[in-house]
Image 1 (cartoon, rainbow, N blue to C red):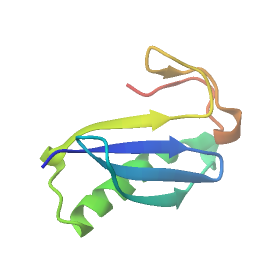
Image 2 (image 1 turned 180 degrees about the vertical axis):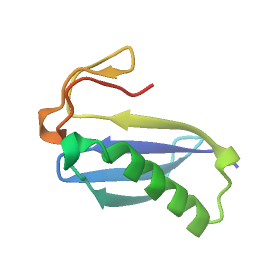
Image 3 (image 1 turned 120 degrees about the vertical axis):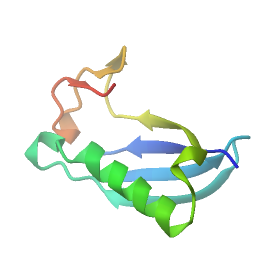
Image 4 (image 1 turned 120 degrees about the horizontal axis):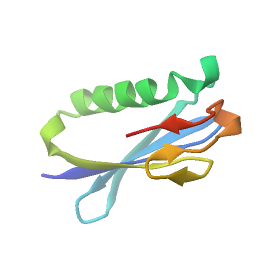
Length: 94
């Protein structure tokens, strides 16, 4: 089976949804947004949460075909221009 993750990064929580390839929301969970150290731990903590979810639910990494992110700030060419509430100045997320 093929899956995708949708990730909504907010100033308080990060909401993560597992979605079927056909677009049906299958499950969701959230983690606290760690804005300490200018938000430098946000992306690694999202990665770790997704890996833990995959392991817990016996889903292979190869079954994940994409991850979409929503951030509270402008993005241009994979560069977040500024997210004040996350502590991010300019961040290249590629």
